[in-house]
Image (cartoon, rainbow, N blue to C red; front, side, top):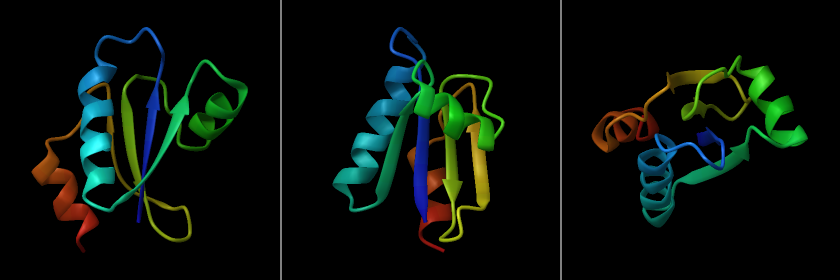
Length: 85
């Protein structure tokens, strides 16, 4: 599974989500980061209907959404439960 993080540079609410994803990366989980102010970020965000920042989307190996959180990051324990399945 892959964690996709959608943020904007000046988003104050995005810092906890960025820290969460840094921690997940340190634990060996795959994380992809997208800036919604960039063309690539907007395109990827459109695929998952991201309209709020931060948004955290967990996808499976086929890029299908498994679970998502929009507007606030999940607790680390909550996302680890999904990732360890």
